[in-house]
Length: 246
Ligand SMILES: Nc1ncnc2c1ncn2[C@@H]1O[C@H](COP(=O)(O)OP(=O)(O)OP(=O)(O)O)[C@@H](O)[C@H]1O
Ligand SMILES: [Mg+2]
Image 1 (cartoon, protein in one colour):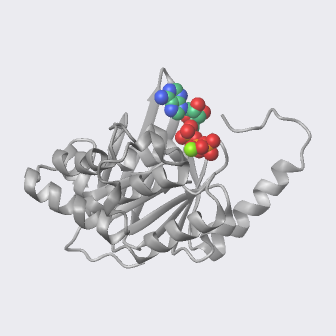
Image 2 (tube, protein in one colour; image 1 turned 45 degrees about the vertical axis):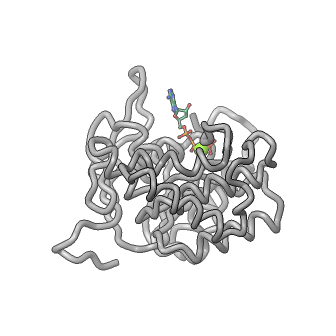
């Protein structure tokens, strides 16, 4: 992995800590990478979603800093919107407006684009997906997969440098998941893919394994994925539940 000395790396996490009510959720997370395919592996409760929220600037760390493409995402909210988009597993936690057009417009309005620019980009984005007719459609009448597509369109319309995927394909049928994956693969943005399934990230350039809120291992998928899988199988073979994360 090479990082040019003159530019900020795409992801730069320096000693990120998060404590909530006196409990350590994340501890000493440091990552520097410029690769365009990053994976975060970890089992349930290890801290993946919390780390994703910190990288997107939605959660302020208790210590350390998170910079994405040079933007300190906790301090520069507007800059963070242009740097990072995040797609969650459950689109219901993401969508806040009644119509598709309003939902797509929101992020760009927050970024400071003019009303006219926002309207143009909303129309362009819907057109790109053949969904021009969705502009005034009520979000509540769409299916789960269709709502996930709206969240993805809202992110792509903002044109971020990086998109974080927090297990967004769980619950989608195979064609819908394949369709969204293809769109993401073709996007200009770098991808950070969060998952507990090492098979999803076999070709990733940089893999971060999180265990109990700390980095257990980071490196290429060829090295990290088999080590993670072996550890998970070892834990799964046990009969007691006392060692379950969290
Ligand atoms: N706001 C919060 N308040 C208290 N505890 C929290 C908060 N957010 C996360 N946690 C705790 O932090 C730990 C990590 O949670 P997180 O959601 O990041 O895990 P995860 O790796 O995404 O798990 P999963 O694979 O189940 O999605 C859990 O024990 C969770 O209960
Ligand atoms: Mg999670």
